[in-house]
Image (tube, rainbow, N blue to C red; front, top):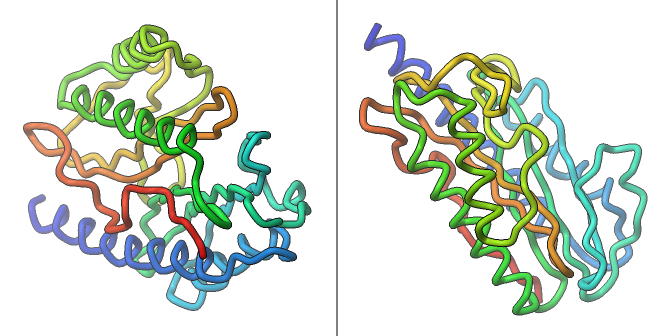
Length: 231
C-alpha cells in the first residue's frame, strides 16, 4: 500500500508541474486585445503539449469595478483591456493521469487594495478549511464550519462545491457539502477552492493537498500565493 501511495504522489507531482507551467504560460501571454478564450487556449495548449489528456480551463476577464465569475469556453468571448482583472482556473490531468487544480488571478496593471484584501481573506478562508481536513472529520461538518466562518466575517456563504477529492476523475468523493456522508481519510488528494464575489472583487484561490495522519501536507502547487501584476 505504501508503494502505491508513493506512485500516486509521483503522478500528482508530474501533473502539478504541468498545471503550474500552464498558468505561467497563460499569464505571460495576457495583453489587451486578446479574448478570454485565447488565454484559456494557451493554458490548454501548454497542458496538452506536456502530457495532459483532459481538462477544463475556466477564465474570465473583468473591469476592476465589475467582478464576474469564471466561465466555460462558450462564455469566454470578452476582449481584455488595460486595467482588467483576469481569473484563471486550470483543472487538468497530467502525464500520470491524476487530476489537480490551480486557480489564480492576474491584473493588466496594478491590483486594487480591495482586490488584494479580498485575496488575502480567501487565503484565510482556505487556511481555516485546511485546519479541518483531518482524518475522521465528516465532510458535512467541514462545510457547515466553513459557512459559519464566512458568515462571521461578513462574506458570502458557500452554496456550491468548494472542496472535494481528486484522482483519476476531476471530481471525486468526498464532496465538501451538506449532503456528503463520507469523511476525510488519510492519503486523500483534496482540492480546496474558496471562491466568492464581494464589493468590487472576485476572489478565488485553488490548490491541492495530500492528507496525512495529522492533516494536510504543504500545498502541492509551487505557484505564488499572490495576485500577479502584469506590467
